[in-house]
Length: 135
Image (cartoon, rainbow, N blue to C red; front, top):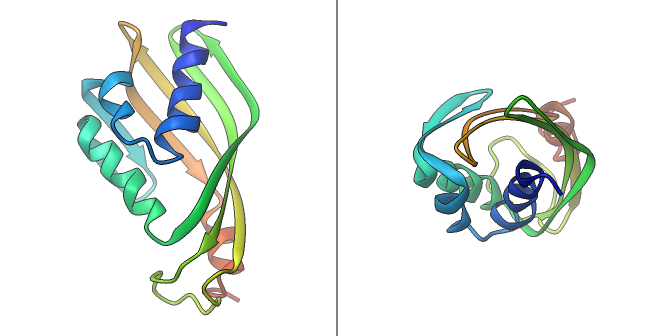
């Protein structure tokens, strides 16, 4: 397995499933994460952003849907997120316990065997619709 493939799997299956300390191992100190509505700097802020994403869900499980595709120091993959809504998202009308799933794609740039930069696109519209916040 390519080392960057293994690194991505740690991101998806360790960090995103709640082992936030792994971020310090796999992200560079100067890491920049580009989420659609914010940027985070460094492993601690990245881990905090993932933790905030988990705050409204229990039983979080991630799945690798495609990839990772590795080349030229870049990694791309498609994933899905599954969990039970616990409440707390403004505008959501779904009852706590409602199961939700949504998909997204990641792109990482690596430096010296760690991830230095990250771009993510996810189906936030689909998630908010499933939670009754839209439509």
